[in-house]
Length: 271
Ligand SMILES: C[S@@+](CC[C@H](N)C(=O)[O-])C[C@H]1O[C@@H](n2cnc3c(N)ncnc32)[C@H](O)[C@@H]1O
Ligand SMILES: Nc1nc2[nH]cc(C(=O)O)c2c(=O)[nH]1
Ligand code: SF4
Ligand SMILES: [Mg+2]
Image 1 (cartoon, rainbow, N blue to C red):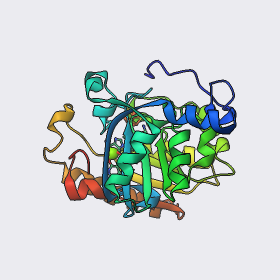
Image 2: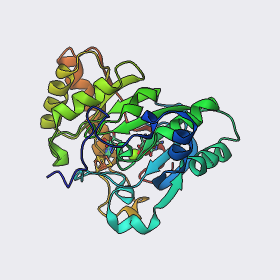
Image 3: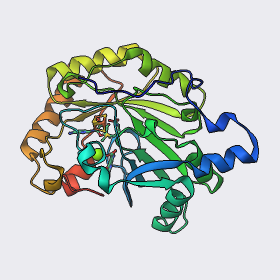
């Protein structure tokens, strides 16, 4: 079931967007808007998908319009953890990114929760002006015109095992909003054959987008127990099975990758 999704902004025109106002007052307003933050951490390496292995600082926003059954970041989704989230301005967030990276520009991953429901346009502009680059991970339910300012957009629609339903029009609108800006890729979590079939179908709907497949990781129901053991046998089995599937199907432009950070640190938070 999809939980109360916020009003969608497929064209970027219906919701208020400070970037459209123009000039210095708009900039001041964009930087003063508050962004709900669950955690900012790094530098670590990007553990998933197209940018795997790249040193990255993560900015994890709080709040999500989905409730995936296997979400590995419930501490940024479930309102039980709301007290741990902080409302920060773009300036404050960027100051922390600069501190963590010793003022050396690097890739910043905007994740969550769903970062698309936060006003991140000002942060991206601020970071770009200092040479930082930005990737954003989203399930593709809400699109923003500031997606066009990203360097990389990772669309990660959710397969049947998540319990969520895909709004294909919203996903398409996200791709279109980024058509002339960032490099856009698709990333799928696969737990079983149904998820794999979903990924094949979704990829066929977006033939221009590179595809990344990663095995699903069973996380503990209580995110406070995240440093428990991971199901390494299950992960390895699903990874082997995925490699078998893509090679047997002759799906030669799909990339199959593990979550590198899970192999290195299990379900630990902030790595
Ligand atoms: C925590 S989500 C946050 C961003 C956004 N809400 C989304 O889902 O794309 C970041 C990435 O982690 C993936 N992910 C979440 N839980 C996972 C799990 N249990 N196993 C493998 N990948 C998972 C998501 O599919 C997404 O690609
Ligand atoms: N190292 C590392 N790589 C990641 N790739 C995607 C992540 C996420 O939770 O969005 C993530 C994360 O939390 N840590
Ligand atoms: S969309 Fe992303 S953050 Fe939201 S519940 Fe699903 S995996 Fe978690
Ligand atoms: Mg994660």
